[in-house]
Length: 393
Image 1: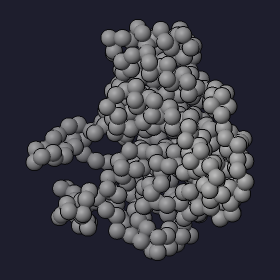
Image 2 (image 1 turned 90 degrees about the horizontal axis):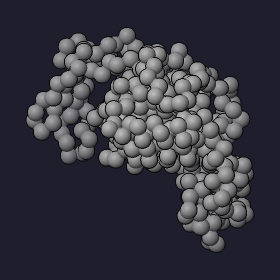
Image 3 (image 1 turned 30 degrees about the horizontal axis):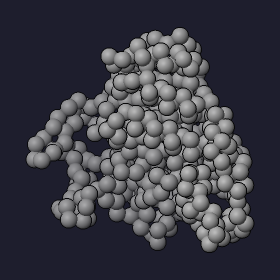
Image 4 (image 1 turned 30 degrees about the vertical axis):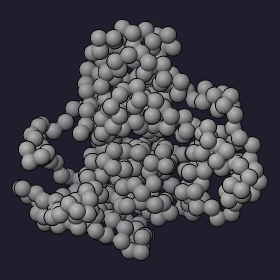
């Protein structure tokens, strides 16, 4: 099949709409549903991300995409009991496979942003992965294959309209890519930079020059994730998963703050007081996610005041004080941070340090590199200048 007609483009008024190949056939097969223009943008960008993560780490990888940027990305490391609980997969009736763990991590990093996501899997979608997808609000999934039982589950989702796409893993695009803007065609070479090359981490200008293997893996995950995230962006990673992505910000510091805030929320969700919240029976996952985000924010009284808390809890919980939150966030350590371009000032490092960042990979080349290095040395942070910019638009 060389061409697939779509219902409409980004918006209902943008017609006609299609995807097509100028040469050869489309490398995708729609197994269920009717994916739209944005669905395919998310699917094809997220597929590239997980395929590259798998090639770089040797581990199954998954991504949760929204509006052509990842809300989460992860590799298939086992889940702790705490993560299983906060990702709501502790009651899945079958053991979680590595690809299921990868998606649980990708979806669980920023559950608010992942609501209604498009999913990418580097490996065949199996039963436990399908069981996780079945219970979440999602637009579709792309994978190189599906087991029969997984496909049966997915075809029943959303009253039979759930989008299921199979990707040809052997497909390689042409080295030149094109797109149009305002009737004008842009052309460039594809971004084929290898982000698993150890040489990227040879230029270490900080006093601390030690990058453990886990930190190297996490920095690779951060950089590969950034390669497919709308710029400006930074990515916080811990234990094989992105925990904070700040996509599409005009200012680097705003990006670092946004992603850092998401990393803090991920960590605060693991606070014993949050995990012990007395939920009313049958509360919907989305309501629970929204309530947790408000509970751990400065607007906590929006869900704890009389007349409101009864909607969510069996009893009125005590709020988390600012001091409690500060103390808990301080326990999050050994976080890795990637940036898609240089840090112009040391304020980015100051903010990253507050969220437990210990390792940084960034392009380097700012006129204030000396200030950035000094700020890293102030906190004992190891930083590599990769010399590689990863803008994506």
